[in-house]
Image (tube, rainbow, N blue to C red):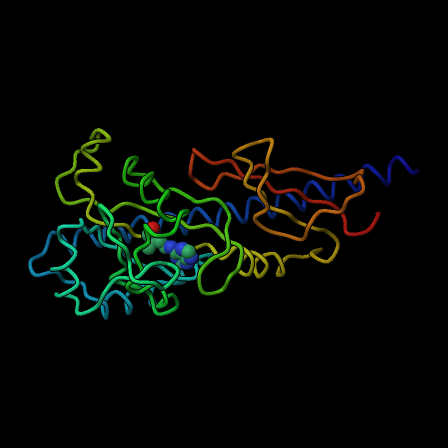
Amino acid sequence: LRRETMDRAEERLVSMCEERARMLQEQFGVTVNHVHALAILISTFHFEKFPSAIDQDTFAKYTARTSFERPLLNGVAYAQRIFHHEREMFENQQGWIMKTMKRQAAPPQDEYAPVIFSQDTVSYLARIDMMSGEEDRENILRARATGKAVLTNPFRLLGSNHLGVVLTFAVYRPGLAADASVEERVEATAGYLGGAFDVESLVENLLSKLAGNQDIVVNVYDVTNASEPMAMYGPQSPDGKVSLFHVSTLDFGDPFRAHEMRCRYRQKP
Ligand code: WA2
């Protein structure tokens, strides 16, 4: 009888964990796809039209109206690629000076990525050189070299200080071939579109709606470096050994990274 109860408890844990993992992965996927479409919208209406059909107001309006398509993002923003020799003219045209993530005047660099358009929910990103943040900078470099969706390590986000990850797509100038080399991609890069997955609050919200939520503890880890998992969501794991747990793999669409969900019972079943 004891054996049977354990089997049933394990079966239930596996099914609850898989349900949560598939749901989270699905919501990540639709969000990434929609940000991809927004990157194409910028290249079509900002770079293929003269004058541009997008300004801060139209960007804010459109991204607010379509936010239901990006359920796990706290907002999106567009950062323009600016070389050092263009900086003075850019700042004069904009009528403002770019700043760093730490809110200081941006020191001289070879190039910058100041945010020129932002959804109202992340208006604190406006004017910030996203290359001044280590995680954002790595994302920008990898996004433009690959042309694919890229994710950062989990880290504390600006604004909320919640644990999350940033998603970035490069926006290319028109005419880039589908099979372009890394050099051609970097050369054709015009800017970067992305946003932050506020994992701490938006995943909590997602899981809280599921039946049986009080019974299990869910953790999400970035396990890109298998020997050093990075916590992305959930309470700190207990020190003692847990006899019954389940690991569900997650695919968030960045082949460079690996993620997994680990589930256990809150109390012994
Ligand atoms: N978005 C929101 N919160 C953040 C953040 C970010 N990056 N970085 C730190 N906290 C404009 O890659 C381009 C968004 C970065 C895109």
